[in-house]
Length: 184
Image (cartoon, rainbow, N blue to C red; front, side):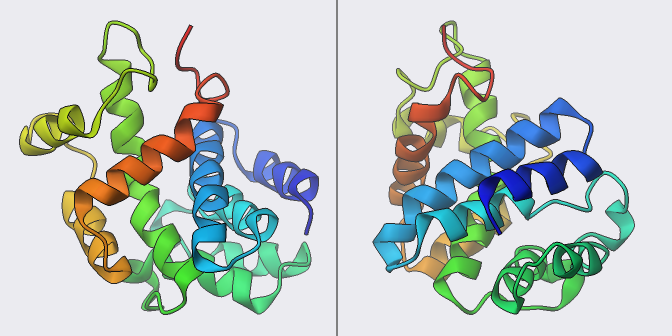
């Protein structure tokens, strides 16, 4: 499946700009991490784009409702399984491969990083540092919809310190901050 096909499928099932931007953020993170784990950035990026495909239409069946849509669009079983595994608390499909674990780890974290950028005077990732993210992390009132335990579990699955995962996600998102509605 090409990126263009994935974007078409995403826009077919998602209308909210916040969901599209989230998909773009996760795509960027997946593209960034792919070479670090010997993966194909295009393939991992498509998985990132499509990971929440069914969220708007079927939130109660998230990670399961999209399986038929993905298969009909030509996604192979590795891609489908990765999408299911990112929501394994709902689907029961545990993240086992590097692609699955990275998707699980970066999904919630991209939202947290973007939320942290949005409250800065610059509204940018360019001047956001891990130390600032760690301060926000400790403030349970900040981005309370972000499940910090999922992020920590994802870092643990990857054998990474949380701070290192945060830095990698910052590195991944900085080049696309304009597409995410951030920066100048």
